[in-house]
Length: 88
Image (cartoon, rainbow, N blue to C red):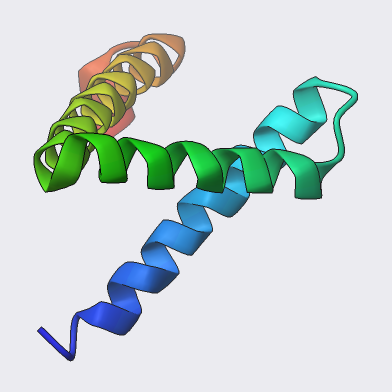
């Protein structure tokens, strides 16, 4: 547990920072403000819903990432002339 804690904190920090940068780029709000908003939302969600809410959120995000990667893979393969051509 003690060995995984620093990695978990860094992973969470990277996700919150990425959220702030994306939302800051898409709006007129400062990136630092969006990072703070993202951190507050994550803390509130975990506090109110507990660890189960965090686990469910992580699962949904994982499914969305996998689906997105599959879709992108098929789009790239179709531009290259099919799956066989892409694998070559």
